[in-house]
Image (cartoon, rainbow, N blue to C red; front, top):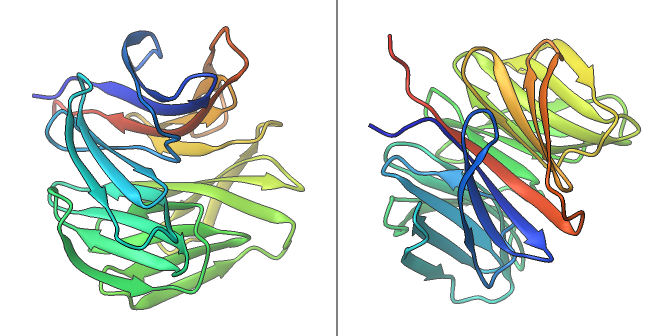
Length: 250
């Protein structure tokens, strides 16, 4: 059984990923040679990280399992999400879309979106949610667009999205800074203004979520109550992506 963990990628004065407890206490870290834009926990004590035209697959001890390099160097992988059997990654550059891959990073399918997505999350119904500008898009994994939720203020920029159960969480910056809580049809249920620029969001257990921002990792209740602010002592560190592994005992 995988123990509960919080994983966060970082760049800046150091590059790699950190493995932390649910209380954000560091248990280990892996320094690498790449700027990881995001991170997603895999189902087998492993992790997937996009960087330029590569998707890297590591175990949690830092052993490189696979480096999948797309042959077109003009592709830039940005967001990543992983389920028990699939890896989904957004890309931009010479093409704009989503790749669907198996856990060994062999491509199964892909679809063009025409959008520069900041984040991607897998839903519970063979579907995907993408954050881009003042939009949250809902797709089937075959590329069929289900819904385009457009926030009426185009100065809002959704930076990342995370899904758990019947809830969608999305971080935003621009004219406001915070996170929104929505149902699976993207109807807003609540929102919290945090006052800081959020790079990434990851849903956790018990109606909580984790946020990355600069050299901070935050733990919030979904109602906006701050549970913990973990500040890394080197302010040249930038936490880019965040992901959570947890198991239910019920």
